[in-house]
Amino acid sequence: MKLSHTTYSCFAASVGDNVVVAGGANDPSLSNAVDIFNIRSLTFVKTVQMSQARMTGAIGVLGPFVYIAGGATQNWDQADSSTILGTVEVVDSRDWSVFPAPSLASPRRQLMGASVPGYGVYFIGGWGGTPLYDAVTTIDYYTCGNGVRIKVS
Image (cartoon, rainbow, N blue to C red; front, side, top):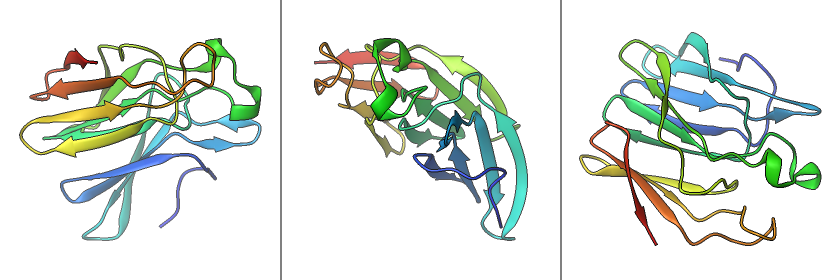
């Protein structure tokens, strides 16, 4: 199996019998591709597109939904506040559609994602405060696969 593009700083998760690999960079460009692979048959399923290319974001799974959050549109050495993302996109593994979810409380990159089945997807910390390289202490979470976000500080 191969990705649809060469990449680093991408993010991946499993949902059902599939592995989802999203975004990443291949200097000088970034990818908005989401590659889906079936782990039982070891075959490529398809590629769908996020609305925005991103790297160094985070990923989490809740039910059939794969949440892709934050990240950056430039490498770290070229980053400024306009290149850090607060957007969240969701891939629905039932039909591989992609749709937006409410944004993070603040834009950030190099955040962490965690999934707790039946409870929520959590996006934790990251970089992106003011100044640009300040660490962020915010935890955002999305519950029940409905895109509801509750800010925890």
